[in-house]
Length: 168
Image 1 (tube, rainbow, N blue to C red):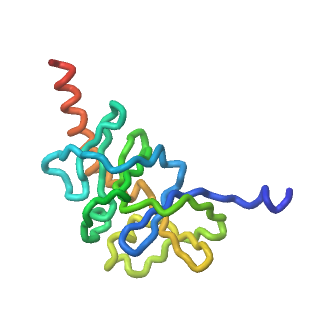
Image 2: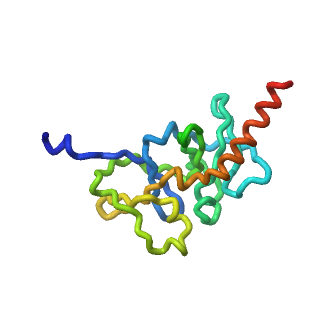
Image 3: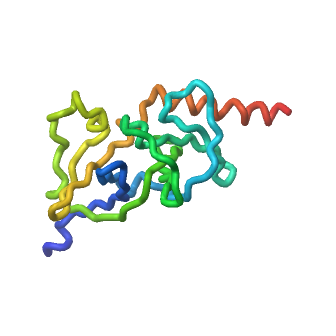
């Protein structure tokens, strides 16, 4: 085997949140769409912004900044929604702006350090660090990012209006 076939590359969609660059495996990403109107769902966690209608499919949407306990910022024309597949569900992640798609070799992906986790809540969502030259990308794990209990609650809220429409 030559060197190119043994080198394992993984692609990540990267985005900015505050001063940091985060990445999510492209395998999870269905599409990236412009920010659109969101229907709020009452009594959800503050980071659960609500629901969007994506070509007839109801998709729950969360704001990544708020999930990371960062100060919210106004949405702009650079604000995007990364639509990901999480287990059997589709979820939208509101991000400030998309940075780029990057490829990282296995040797440039290292486990997330355990320091500072008590002080920096967003670290619990990071499973690894991607090294690119002098830059660092914080690689997110959707299982950690999307709390099952919170997600199930909004998923049930999303189903109730659809069930009402079928009965009408």
